[in-house]
Amino acid sequence: MTVIAFIGLGNMGGPMAANLVKAGNRVQGFDLVAANLTAAAATGVAVAADSDAAVEGADAVITMLPAGKHVLSVWEAVAPRVRRGALLIDSSTIDVDSARRSHAIAAAHGLLSIDAPVSGGTGGAAAGTLTFMAGGAKDAFAKAEPILKPMAGRIVHCGDAGAGQAAKICNNMILGISMIGVAEAFVLAEKLGLSHQALFDVASTSSGQCWSLTSYCPVPGPVPASPANRGFTPGFAAALMLKDLKLSQDAAQSTGAVTPLGAEATQLYGLFNALGHGGADFSGIISMLRGEHGQS
Ligand code: NAD
Image 1 (cartoon, rainbow, N blue to C red):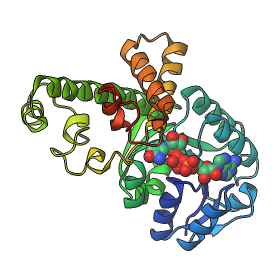
Image 2: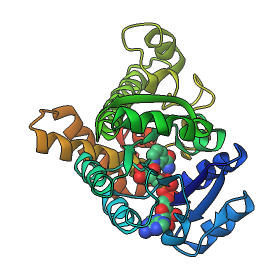
Image 3: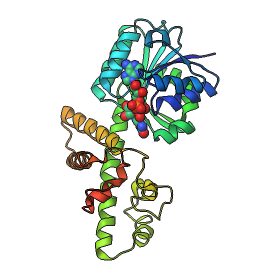
Image 4: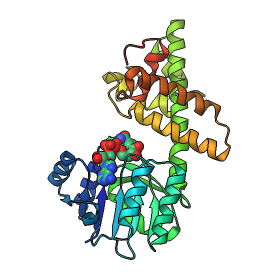
């Protein structure tokens, strides 16, 4: 039986760990929040007193934490305690520089490692259909693949250390920009007296087609499962979109990439968050573009 330590049992980590248990692994979990430990125990996770206890005897350690600083501090603490030959996997969304530093921590202790952020949200975490974007050496990826499988719909090896995080923030920069573009088009259509359905029927099969329109339409009606049909309950919260856009802009700054639309999208999501809508789905930005500042 594979022993997996899972550190960070929040909205994503909780259901991900539960799927690893369902697949027959022994999962030793730890989180700082007691309620998350109780919920994890109910799904069959063996709750540990701290991260040191969680990694005892583990074949692999998975972290699912808020940001780079949390990942680095946990990896620094556990790397000397993990048995030789074990694999470290970070599935949090963090900055590329921290991801590369985390790989260096693992290497300094003779451990294999991959960065493997995900897309698919809490729904994908619960259903075991997440897309994993992995960065790291080939042998580390080969070892990680069967471990990730029970949580995954798709696993892509993107390249060396940090490549998974790079793919994640590039993808989400496209998403932030394209959602604003689609929302602006619907607001303009409303002003022109064009119905939502008419714009959808044309653009969804024309050159304006994109995921933000056809899978996540920001107006109710054309795509019944989109958050616009349920008052913009997430989904993917605007606060997390802002986090990912900021990571894209940090990366653009440190590499010299020119991303003016990414910068503009970061500003617009910053404003949407500042207006109190960080907990709303990110497609709710359409209401700000309509000038409905008080609502999302
Ligand atoms: P979350 O805040 O629900 O979970 C993070 C957990 O980490 C919390 O329960 C917290 O108590 C725990 N934690 C923090 N420091 C810790 C430590 N030192 N030791 C043990 N536990 C610690 O966040 P989430 O929504 O589960 O997201 C986790 C990561 O996944 C983030 O990086 C996020 O950007 C990314 N992500 C989230 C989504 C989503 O839809 N929620 C989608 C894709 C990626």
